[in-house]
Image: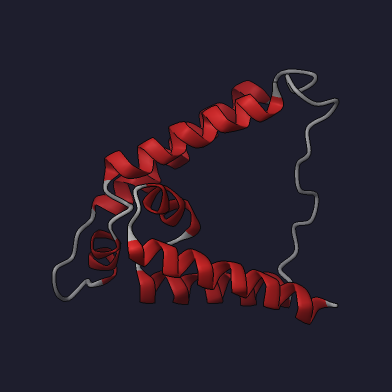
Length: 135
């Protein structure tokens, strides 16, 4: 049942990303082009996601226990370490260059966009390299 719930949540997320147009790298890159062809729609997508998350967390965390686990697994660290800052910077740079983030690239990959395949391959290589460097 947990795998089915994760699949359904992923399908809903992917559909939302596709419907909002965020699988199109040009749309995302236009958000970053403030002096040119600026497109503010990404702000509304992120704002909607933030609103749903805020409400969802309030409702879900009222329960004593999650539906498919024994306990909630929430982060406890609140500090900013170099790995978090560096990872965030690499994420932002990659997003600004490619116009894809993992949340947009995976639904685009499912729609057979060749650029998404290149991005996902590079992302997997980056994850493998980061794990190797941490050891």
